[in-house]
Image 1 (cartoon, rainbow, N blue to C red):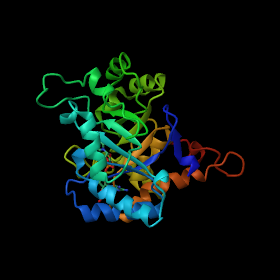
Image 2 (tube, rainbow, N blue to C red):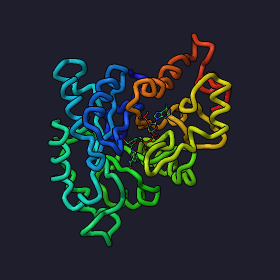
Image 3 (cartoon, rainbow, N blue to C red):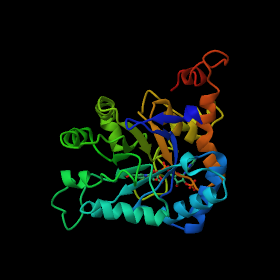
Image 4 (cartoon, helix red, strand yellow):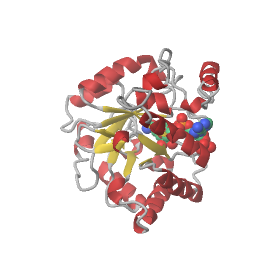
Length: 295
Ligand SMILES: NC(=O)c1ccc[n+]([C@@H]2O[C@H](COP(=O)([O-])OP(=O)(O)OC[C@H]3O[C@@H](n4cnc5c(N)ncnc54)[C@H](OP(=O)(O)O)[C@@H]3O)[C@@H](O)[C@H]2O)c1
């Protein structure tokens, strides 16, 4: 798995492919089965959040796998998030998340949105104390943010004693962040903040998503040409990130959700196809070679 890890500015490594666990159905059994299946396939990064309601299922499946020696705790990377209504007491929220998961620590704790909900709704941004209160190094290995623009990253850097390691943002063909994706990427690289791309397939089936990415005719025609599926198709010229493979080829990590085993495998495909690039022995020296310069 070495090739599929990224080193973060806080010193730890994170698997570049994460399994998303938001599902509007929030069925505990289905989520647990998906986590077990994902572990078998080699997924080692699991993305949850208090607001998804999937923390208990993710935690219990991982705990079971750890107890059964399927995997060591050290070999899985668990991300969860501070919800906006908990900004006033992040310590209590973090403890609740650990309790939900049944785990002693998180690998990554993200501020889910730069938005504070009631009773502090008039202050859309969390304040300095909120961040400083997160100084609980026994409870997590790294902290980061999510859905932060480059301006908010700058604002944060003005007072935060710890630079976030990750900014998790939507990244696909049709998402708003892509309009300014370049600026955000440059800003984040200045601070050595890693970009983690969520909804890489456009979140079909979610209230915030659509099938526009997987049904895009250009994506479909490239998929056809390469005997691939739309989820495996990158398209460099038009989009910053449009699918798991493209996100990875741009150096970002990717959080993609599927609870369907064949699609979970499909979404891992880009890692193995990346491995078929070898600059000395393979006919494909780079991902660009493999994809005939179409990424
Ligand atoms: N930080 C944030 O604010 C934030 C926001 C949104 C999401 N996220 C995280 O990112 C994860 C992924 O985002 P997302 O769920 O919005 O979008 P996504 O991963 O782009 O899309 C998930 C949807 O695509 C389907 N799908 C998965 N693989 C497929 C494939 N190979 N071909 C066709 N359809 C496929 C899934 O259905 P099946 O399960 O039936 O395969 C599911 O309906 C979430 O679960 C969550 O962990 C974070």
